[in-house]
Length: 390
Image (cartoon, rainbow, N blue to C red):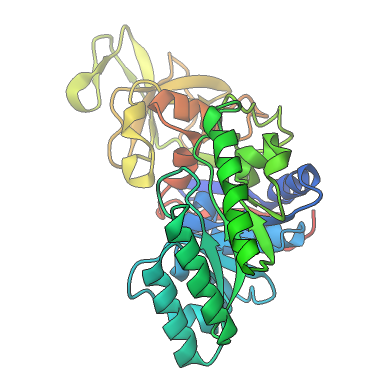
């Protein structure tokens, strides 16, 4: 086992163990599902909480040829870490963004409108280096992206003009699904039709992109006609199913990458009728033992899982007793007396009977994406199987 940073000699109160061999296996599974397309591994938000640089390196080792980030700062961090021979795309820009730095770093930048095209073109002029630009089409998600029709035709025309001046290269045409995690949703076919129409407009005008892409994780898993030249895989890379409708991780041949563990800080006997945590939303039904788990909502444990969040302690599922506090929560051990320092496994692959991130998502009324991404910086990431091809 290798770690991303030197760990203290005493056991940490909590850790998120990241299995990079599982991540590599997931990337290989996703590549096999889209054999005619390149794979972009999305490592935004610190690789969905898993640690961007180690996960990016492992994904590239497993055959990903692109990396995706939301912000330019996330992309710069990958370049600074030595990931210089892989294409990196970033798509979340605001006016005045660090366009010149992005151009000089060789990033692929997403452009959704004329203001962004103007800013990146000027940055390329100042840098003396052509910008790598990907034009984003809004095919129905209604977030970023250029509207079809006159807006799209104008953006394409101006991009071609800048390309003719040597200021940029349109490297990609792309879009994003709204409901690909709901197989059969009518918006999926509608978006694919709109995307093909917008591709035809751009290519008919003379755009010759390196890649065309719309498929996210659920589309990669279920919609081969959406694969085009590149698939963008985010949550599936980390072994988590995009939605129950798509299937479980096991159904999809994916293995969850993160295991969240804490050390039980205290075990004590209490009488019946004893209130637990703020507001006494839980009162012990009889004499029992309580265990203190030293993580809370400051560490990313959802307060919405108060009274419902599952934890494996001493080989048994327990449930958060009462409210999740900022730094800790309590479980009712039902009279069992595990030693302080024993492991409390909040979630993992499920191999040892422990809960999964999906179980926590159900308990908190959210999605598993949020469960892993929200684990905070107070919880050290310990990357295992680092620096090997698996």
